[in-house]
Amino acid sequence: MRHLLNPLDFSVEELNELMDVALDISKHPDQYSECCKGKKIATLFYEPSTRTRLSFEAAMLNLGGSVLGFSSAASSSASKGESVADTIRMVSCYADICAMRHPKEGAPLVASLHSSIPVINAGDGGHQHPTQTLTDLMTIRTLKGRLDHITIGLCGDLKFGRTVHSLINALVRYENVRFVLISPNELRIPDYIRQEVLSDNHAEFKEVTQLEEVMSELDILYMTRVQRERFFNEEEYIRMKDCYILDAKKMELARSDMLVLHPLPRVNEISVEVDKDPRAKYFEQVQFGVYIRMALILKLLEEASK
Image 1 (cartoon, rainbow, N blue to C red):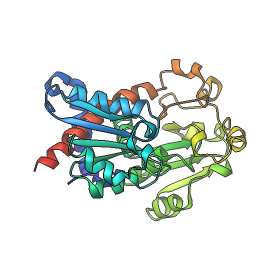
Image 2: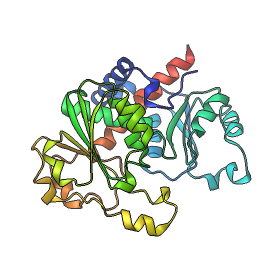
Image 3: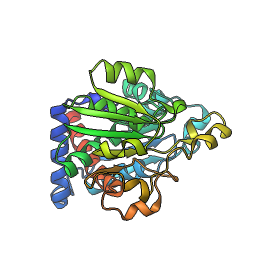
Image 4: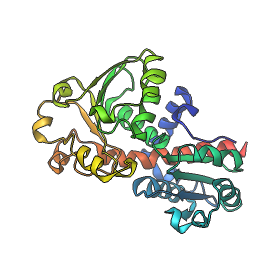
């Protein structure tokens, strides 16, 4: 059984094939409208989500399949104490594939060990978010034409940001990708990412605290929000939440072809005035997310049927 728990579960060649299919879907959606007729996806979201859950559901509906699941732990038997292992055993009887989001790191891995259907990690705590990474890669490749020879700035909460961790893991496999890590000292990238992912792969990177000083260097600026749900106390969150706000004035420092991405939701880290800038691509990024999840569902169901 093939699952997607980590961006590294697929080789670079498989990722390229997946993005090729997603791009074809974007151009010829009608040709894929009945590919999953009779199939069901279970969306098991133990943690709140708008984009990721609806994106998976839209992806399956666009393929002609159907959807079941829950959108919070409170509306599932987890509120009665049911384990993830038991939940996935039960869901395997109802659905053909599953997307799971969970606040505990490793929960989708546990599910995969007890599942008879493919499991997709839709985000586990501050650990990984592989389908957001697929979305990010497709956005960059489609709009920039490449995934190598780029300088990417990752800004905001780099400590708890699972989208950042997953994206770094994926991009270190491409040639000449330079990372600029922009965060307050308290929200710096975790040591294991710095050492085991960046340093061990000989990736070029630097860490800074000021966004303005590096804007002119970047091909891509990947903004993230400071996540209230990852903090242990409100006071600490309030102190950190406004560390970086991207506005029109800062955008004047950037290259004319720089892309601004964001996994969303945003709070106030990107001013709404930036939305009008042609370099702001975060809403296009959302659309790419549907196409790449459609391609992923097709791939995993095909693997499961072998």
